Each structure stands twice: as C-alpha cells, then as structure tokens.
Length: 321
Image 1 (cartoon, helix red, strand yellow):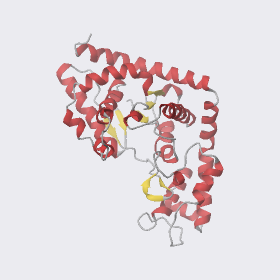
Image 2 (cartoon, helix red, strand yellow; image 1 turned 60 degrees about the vertical axis):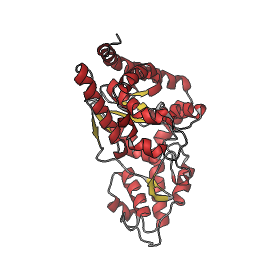
Image 3 (cartoon, rainbow, N blue to C red; image 1 turned 90 degrees about the vertical axis):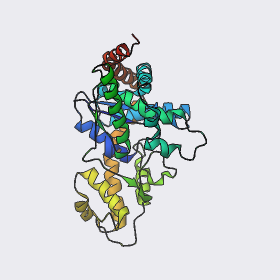
Image 4 (cartoon, rainbow, N blue to C red; image 1 turned 30 degrees about the vertical axis):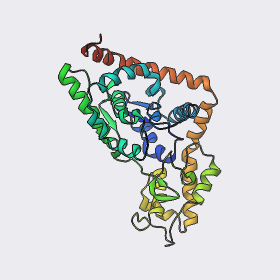
C-alpha cells in the first residue's frame, strides 16, 4: 500500500496543519508512503515567485522537522518534466465538463474577471501526482474528495482503452484528523491564507507570539470551562487543541482550568512545548541551505525513480514512444 499526501505552500504551516496532517504523517505512515510540497498547485492563484520559493523551502523544512523521513519527502516541481508529460496525456483523457464542475474551481474562480486556466486544470495535475507515483490511497478532506474521484475516473478510462497502466486510487478520510478553528473566529478553520492572522498560530511562531495569540483568543460570556461545541464553540476549540496536544479528550481537558485566562495559558504552554522541537529543527535546516538542498535532491531522485516506469508505460501505450 502506498499513500500520497501533499501540502501547498500558499502560506506558512500552521498549528492546524501540524495537528491534522503532519504529525499523523510522521507517526502513522508506511515505508512506501510519499509526502510532497505541491508548489505547482500554488500557482493557480496570483502569487509572488520569490515568496513561493521561500515558502516551498520553509514547508519542506517543517515537514522534515516534524519527523517525516527524508526518503519520503519531495518537492512537486522537481518532477516537473515527468508531471508535465503525464499531465498532458491526462488532459487529453479528461473532458472539459469534468474539469469545469469541480467545486473548488467554481468557488475560487467566482468573482474573478479572468480565472487562470491552471485553476480549471489543476485537478488533472493532482491526478497526475497521484497516478505517477502509483498511490493506492490518498488521505484527503471532504473538499478534495472530488479531485480523487476524478483521478479514479481518468485512471479507469485510460486503463480501459489501453491496458492496465495506472493503479486506481481511493480517497481515505483520516479518522483522527484534528480540525483546528481560528482563535479569533471559531466559525472558520485556521488557514494559511487568512487575511487576519491574529487567530492563526504558525509552527515557526516564537513562543511569546504563540502565548500572545492564545491570550487574545475569543471565548464567550458564559464564564464556564466546559466542552460544548454548539453553545461554546470558541472554548471548545481551545479544549480540542489542548486535547490534541496532550493525547486526552476535550471533555477531560476541561478540568485543566477553572477560568478562561487559566485555560488560555494552559493551552498556550501545551502548544509551545509541542511545537518547540519542530520549530527548532526547521530553523536549523533553514540555516543550513546546503543540507536542505541535499535532502531535497535525494527525495526528488527517489520520487522520479518510482515514477519513471509508470510514465514510460503511459507514454508508450498513448502512442508517444
């Protein structure tokens, strides 16, 4: 079994990314699993090249510092040649209507005078990511499930017309993925792209910054520390974060504090200690660019080696070799 997961460097890695994905990748993966920085996906919306370059390196350093093995990590654009070739083959397998009805294209393209073509076709590139590596399972959230279904459709269509080239993957929704809410607005998820970042805790935030953000977290006017997501969503978010850090339940976590101020301080310290080794490890890697480049080159070589036989077979049966 091979699982494939990616993270898009559209911003700095935050606490929700770490609790919901990176920590799970580091502890629950198998030897054949692959994790990648999807920098090509970050180009579907307006961006600055120098920021994309810096965020790609930063995201890579954070993945490695989170405990994900170096052999399992690569940067998507390092396989641009292989992906570009397969992406074209798959675009010629995909119908326009199939791409146009993707929910994220409709949402992100809404209100734009001229949406980028890449925003329309990037689910096909995502399919190329998956099929090129022979992934059998793709852990995703609900918002990405439709894209994995497209990958399954394209794999079956290609295989049906030309022979069994691609593994047909399946989407899996992680059972224990933490859903961390914005500290300033529990109605929305913590997000890298948030316009107001006061409620977003980033993995590389200094401890005092983390403490300050939790100190300013919204609560409610009930003045009771209890886990009630419907009636007290802001407090529930803090308790869920504390439980994710300590390994307990949010109900049990409610006994750790009797006041909101005490709860905020307790959660802040738990987060600071959880992120400390990741932050320190990532900083160390970013301060040693030669080592980070070496790890990146090694990961790219391994991913390309795995991809080459499958790409060769696809190109051959498509009549290109």
